Image: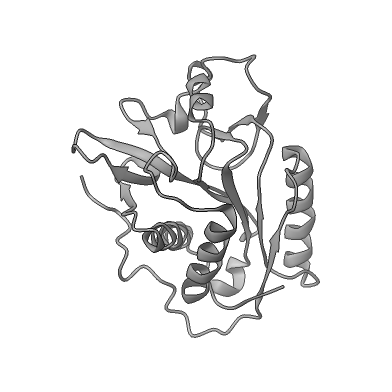
Length: 231
């Protein structure tokens, strides 16, 4: 099992100093389609030069989203929750209460138009955040997302996801970390098209963390990789 985005050496080495990234935290669950509409507007503004880069932390009501690689047979329970075509990379995933979603709207025209590097930096951000709470997240060749090894070494469980889209080299969609969602909600899909592995959360790993504490760790770990943030 190879970690394809090692924790060390994955950060952005660019010497370009970017303006601080706006950091926003939603106070209530946000409808998925409303979130997409907002992101598309913000991405257009960033590309036009009159909008700030942004990270938006939120939760969604329970939904399944289908990425560009989603296979119909991987939607096991079509009527369980609303299903949205997302336009991001990847396959089916779940969003719902207890999962922190971070939508990342950054201008790769200025930061460097390298999608692989960008995704590895997102993975580093997730792994660094998990490490704050003593959780060793890893990436796997051929499997999207961040994984943790089971204590008995019987396999891996997925704890965080990455799914991004680019519009004229401005990113949107982003990452998610399972804090304490209802993991049975994943039963309605084959998560990211990967079989033979499970899904876990910080709560299932018996890590006692609040959403505010997770948000603080995400913010602290974002800065060394992507630069300063501001409210």
